[in-house]
Image (cartoon, helix red, strand yellow):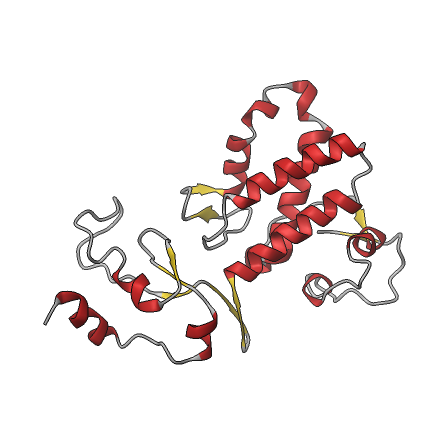
Length: 220
């Protein structure tokens, strides 16, 4: 019997459950994402070269790309969409900048976040499996030119960091950072004129009450 077939039979992959059908799967060696669990299981098993951190006898744990919160499973793809959506809404509706500056901030925010599409997420103070760097350190590395230029460093870089960090915290509260300050309930209502979604109101230690005043400060 071929090795690949023996592996599949031995692992008894989950192909029938709703989780297996609805969510993509990733290879724990390289984090490449697949539609089927069996493809993820076979990804690096058939490669001659293993990652530098691989040790003989290591048994990888395969699983869906996402997090379980109680009985609800949320894919990292959904969390990524929340991250990108929150960050861009903050730029579009909260930052009081000229249209040209706002467009530039948005471009930088989207470009940075898109780098992580298709990978498991990591919190701001946690190491990302793709870059092997803490997210906060990777941000500093990626925007190094702005740290070295005093004229560019101030409000422009702060806006980029706030949008990216706050969005990531909202999307992935399991690895929440120290957060960002300076925003209000009114800012959230500007971002979500159709109504603030539950994943935002439930982010806070005490769920945000619907009658909260616009001027009340929130720690994102």
